[in-house]
Figure 1: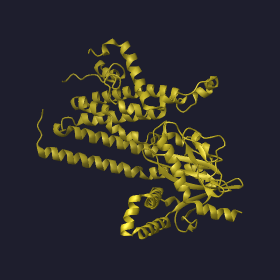
Figure 2: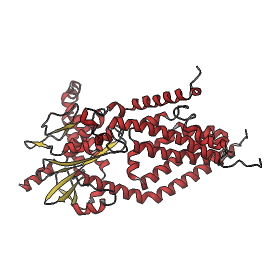
Figure 3: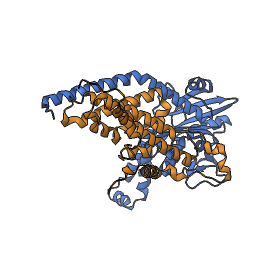
Figure 4: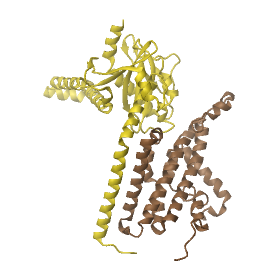
Length: 215
Length: 278
């Protein structure tokens, strides 16, 4: 292939944009649900988690894609896991050194990025068969699609569950408590994250009818 | 699909592991001093938080040196242990000692109650020796306990800060508790945790939960009661209880146990100090 594709061809743009909407890893592929339930109680950790996943997924996608022709297929899963684990430990170490407060808040969930099925899924399904630049865009796109859902869920859970946004007491400032409103403690519990994700899936599928499963 | 020989697979995986390990250990070593510094500053921040002094990461060290004008390590009898650096006390090990002592004490109580052991000891007649062996072991562990004390001078008053460490639901919890000069009234607390559930157990590190402790008493008629974390809410005017967090029974119970177990070690120190004080 001598005629090189432009960096942002429509195909590449699709790699970036698809996962944000009609190919979203959480709402359409239903991957990575577990961590989406665990850390979406507050906005701040969800945001940092999204950034961390974007870094880990983009970086390991590129690494795997660069070496895709040299990785023996028989041990490819182990190689992928090693790369992901190394990236996650890097993120953890850097957060501990330069953003100690946030790393304290995220605690164990940074380490748990390793078990996020989206990352493994993208490495196996995309990076093993595509060039580094496409793999990079795919990584950014998928991780951002994951992050967007995380932030939407966290927005509603923090607002309705604790009455705050980014630790800022919104409801207290509005004065809504004075007319008898109380925070909904149920929103803080993990089941409500599942229900919130369910509502997002419902809204999305009623807008894009093609996404509805046939049977 | 391309075929790879076994030799290639082995070589590939060894080289990959070596590269990854080198990279990670290099980064880890480079960042270690920063991380240790962060942890120390964090500890200072926590100690200051327990005497209701607000500070951020930047001025923690400065304020710590300004307010905390004495700190030392004591043993279980309230005597100062010379030549032990206060920051070097490993609270993890102290917690292990407390747990061991509690287990041994439980053993003593069980011995008295269980009919089977009564029967057995009736036959073999080693109950007495066994009991004294357990007691001497408790004393042996108590002897090597190390308890940090920080003294904060704020205005004209002195506050005494004690270290706490216990178990939450998923991992360790820790904290500091400061007493007023009467050695009975709680002046402030700080609780931290490693992996408690955000929004549930993690609430112990919020000001809302911690401020409940202010003004509570540790002793009634010179008897140690500690502060209890009461499920379902406390009666108004309860001097020994604070409200638990709904939805996090285990963490709340962990805080209560931590307070009791850790402060228990300071009783003799407090008794000695309050005599001096009077």
